[in-house]
Image (cartoon, rainbow, N blue to C red):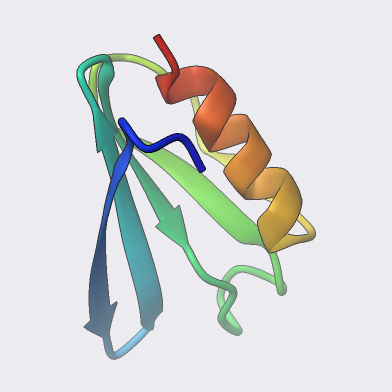
Amino acid sequence: MNNKIQKSYQSNAFGDRVIYTSLKGSIALDYPCYLQYSKFELKNLQGNLVKKNESYGSLEVAEERIEKLLSE
């Protein structure tokens, strides 16, 4: 992960979430739970980087997409 991208972790009753932030905006990565059919989901928080929620089958693929979206 790019060193200009910051990560913060959150946990709630429905699962875990990591917030990735750079100067371009913020993206939430929701870890799989029974509601998401075992998919990692990306959600836009700030900056219009993700037009609609995106789902991925692995953490590595999801993080590659996040790095591409948040890189300068």
